[in-house]
Amino acid sequence: MIRSLDLSTLANLATALTVLVATIFALLEFRATRRERQERAAHAVVAAIMTPEWIRSVVTVQSIPDHATLQEIESNPRMLEAAHSVATILEALGYSVYKRLVPLAIVDELIGGTVRVAWQRLDAYVAAERKRSGSQKSWEWFQWLARQLERHRLAKTSLALGAHEAYDSWRP
Image 1 (cartoon, helix red, strand yellow):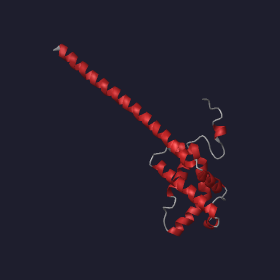
Image 2 (cartoon, helix red, strand yellow):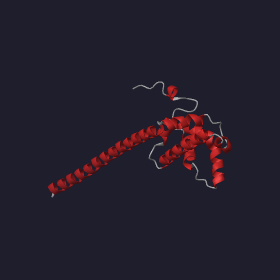
Image 3 (cartoon, one colour):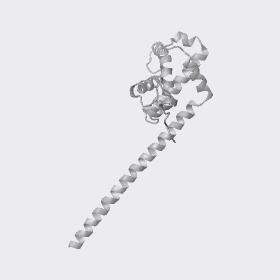
Image 4 (cartoon, rainbow, N blue to C red):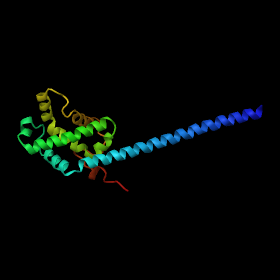
């Protein structure tokens, strides 16, 4: 009887240990998969923004005055095209952040300043476009993304402090 009790206890311990090891392994695999997904998302963000069209459009949007009106933007075809290009890309990026496909921290680090500046330049235009169309759907995720970046401020950098200063003490 004592011998079977010891075997029974030993079997229970072995089962518990197996479950514990499997749980730890699963958690480690989950973390590795999550990290890999975030790295792929960062790569996708970089790939999306490193096009000649994006670069030209961002430079144009950054030259637009803050809170530019619908008339100001629509009077310049290049400005209008750039505004639509940037807003559409940031719309898709905002939705990707919302669906947790791309972490907000990665967006903040890579192009948080660009998003903030673009929204500052285009907010009045977007509001006028929504009023004209009668729909709040125009560039809703672009606005959402800009709000989330302001609300959470995950990056060490800001419009006043660039990466060259914020990460000056970085070592490989």
